[in-house]
Length: 154
Image (tube, rainbow, N blue to C red; front, side):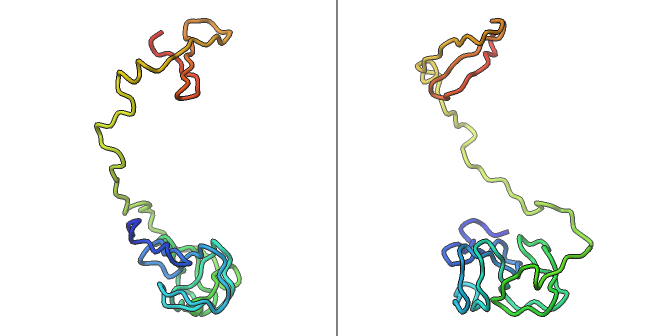
């Protein structure tokens, strides 16, 4: 799996995995446009979000995106060609169901992070909201969160 900083997104295409033979167009790419990061020149007009061949793909060979087979070449496909239903085919094949086997958790926030300290929580005004229901589980309105909170203390 490519790390985010390894994904080539400054170009007109995005390579999602180093093992892919298809890349994704970030924008509409006209025919004859050079894609330096892949070393190819487009042979067709490529719609935004569509796949294009990053290398030669022979007839019957899997088309790989996200390091997963998304179809098979219906004919020999030259680099820079738009990959779509006119030159791809779909068929049954043995699959490896090791989905997300390359997943590695990342620590977005430190484990000790607490969005509100106790003093900040105490400073936030919280009003009791009448819900027309029994007051056995009153709802509290918190302007910071802009939503109702069911009181766990009641």
